[in-house]
Each structure stands twice: as structure tokens, then as C-alpha cells.
Image (tube, rainbow over all chains, first blue to last red; front, side, top):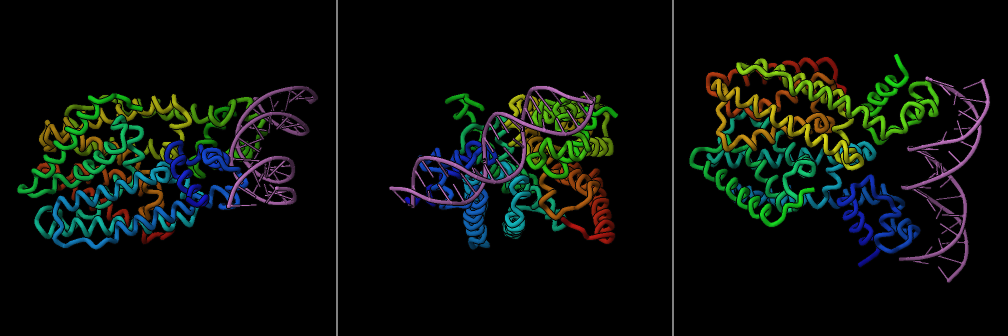
Length: 220
Length: 220
DNA sequence: GTCTATATTAAGATAGAC
DNA sequence: GTCTATCTTAATATAGAC
């Protein structure tokens, strides 16, 4: 593996683990057993590492969000889709844990991130409209903006939020619970024939929670 | 006004304005036209200013949240109550804009903040139960945890969220919209007799938005 | 590409005069 | 209480040998 790539991977790991502001270029080179000078040969500084990581993050997310969505999407597809998105967000969680700060220091990233949110918003809207057309959901036209915004908020802040709620200690649980939380937003809009989907989701989540807490109780 | 208090006030202002990580002790003393040495006479460093500000924040919020809530609360009371909470959150928004980072660096604050969230959660639950008892809302027992958690998420992250959404540039609009967003969470649970409250709230918010955007279009 | 050694910068912090 | 002057520390960054 090339040193450049290893720097990116190590930085991502340390940023996620320790929080981006608490990781210096020396920390990164120490972790990799290379010299700080070597790191500076590949990247002119931490700023440039962050920008490069953001580019990766953006590219992957755009690919996910722009993947063609079937008009005959069902709840199971939508559910699966949410998992893909959440897993991606989790992979780059350092970014969401210091959102304002990073966006403040990097105006370029800020612009691009705003565009990303719009894309998220559009994809959510499209998905909801498909589910409405199939009469799985029943959301009034005028209520769409609020519902979409609520979805965006949970998508954007859940992983950060989960870290200071005693919600789960393991990655899977954070993601499961995030998906469930989004589902709870649209739960009241399910048509009666489909309400069981929400009940199933809760049951699924609660079973997982029970298993995981009986295993070990290591909340941080 | 005593220097010590002025330091706290100036710090709060600068933290909110520029973001806490971008403000140094020298910045604070410059803004006040005192020497850094003088600042260090009053506080042993930035850490201690933050801790003191957090104490103020906590005390005020606890007072708000523990204020006796009337069992016969109506929607208007609940609405008003939300405004009080949001205004308080806005006053200390620097804290919410760098939540993970501050909680990571100050374990004491972390503990206390978790307790605060629990208090928020309890108060929300109590309010909802009162509204359910009066048959204004209709939320099933089993759905309460999710609905409450969604309220907590919006309360905790809205003000930060609004700063990178082109939602509003002025304080009042951010707060109005936050209150409306919370209302949209419980909107689907309104009993038919009370749905008009939600419609009114949207109308109120949209009118304000129209006024403010015709005045000046200075999004940041 | 990678290392060692060293320079620069800015934040954080203190001593001692007034 | 407040100032000036100075010190310490850690992060950032570069030069030059290998």
C-alpha cells in the first residue's frame, strides 16, 4: 500500500477515534511509524489531508445518492437504502462530529457540503413521493418540506448525537437505531395496511438491543 | 461591571460569533482592551471560562425545565414554553456548535450534559402526556420513546443545523423555524379538532419568512 | 521517498512592577 | 486589579542528507 493512501487511512481512523481537533500531523506519523517530514512530503499539512478525505467522502456519497432508484420501490428497498447511507456516514463520522468547525475553517468544503445536503434532500423527497404514489405512505403535499427536513436532520446529526446518548456502544446498534429513528419520523404517515412494517422494525430493533445488552454492558 | 463578568460576557459573544476553537485568550483580552495577564488573573485559562459559562448555561436551563408545568397546559402554553427553551439554547449556541469537541475535552461537562438531556427528555415526556390526557394529542404509549428522542434531537441540533442550511439569517427566524420544526414532529398526532393549530403555526411561520426575505436577502 | 534536525508560529501561561 | 515583559509548549513546517 502506498504511503499516501496509508496516511489517508490512518488519519481517517485517528480522526474518527480521537476527534479531528485532537489529532496532529505528528500523531499521524507516529501511528504509522514514519517521520513527520515524510508526511509533509505527501501532504502539505493536516488541512490538505482533511480536504482529500472530504473529496473521498463526497464522491462516495454522491454515487450512493445518485444511484438509480426504482419507481416501484418498496419499504424493504427503502430500508436497505437507508442502511447504505448510514454506513457511509459512520465511516466518515469524524466529519459530522466537528461539522461547524470544519465548515468554518474550509469554505470550499462548506459550499460543497451544502450542495450535498440538497442532494440528500432531493433523494429523500423522490423516495417519499414514490412511496406515496404506491399508497404506502400518506403525506400531504404541503407537509413534505418539514418531513424532509426532519429526515435530513436525523441523517446529519444522528451519529454525533448517538455518541453522547447511552444508546449503543457498537457500530451496528448506532446504525440500526438511526435507521429506526428515521422510520419513526414517517411512521405516522403509513397507510393502515403498512403499519406492520413499523411494528416489525421496532421489534427487530428491540430484539437486537436486548441481545447486545445481555452480552456486555460497556457503555462509554 | 466587574472585569470577571465582562470576560464571561465577551467570551460568550466571541465564542458564539467566531466559534469557540477560533477564539484565544488573547483575542478575548484584545476585544476587551485589557492585557492577557489581567485575564489570567481572573481565569486560569480558556478552559475555566468555558466551564464557568457552562455552569451559567446549565443553571438557567434547569430553572426553565423545572418550572412547574400546569396539568391543564394547552397548545399555546406549550408553544410559548418551546420559545423560551430555544431562546436559551440560542444564547449559548457556541456550545452546541462544538458539542463533541467540548464534551471530549471536559469530562465533567459531559456528565452534566447527559443529565441535562435526560431532564429535557423527561420534561418533553411530561408535556406530551399532559397533552395526550387532554386529548389534544394521540400518541400510543409504545411510540413515546421515539417521538421524545426526535424532539430531543431537534432541540439539541437545530441551531447548529440552521447555520449551514439557508434557512434564515436572523435570530428570530432561526428560533421560529426551530419551534415549527418541533411542531411538525407532533403534527401527525394531533386529534382532528386541533389540527388547525399546526396549520396556524405553518401560516405564521410562512408569513414571517415572506416578510423577512422581501426586506433583505442577506443569506450567509 | 524517507529520514534527522531544526525553524517558525501561535496559543497558553507566569513573574514582577505599578 | 492591572500592566509589561517573558517563558513554555505543542503544532506546523522546511532544509538538506541519505
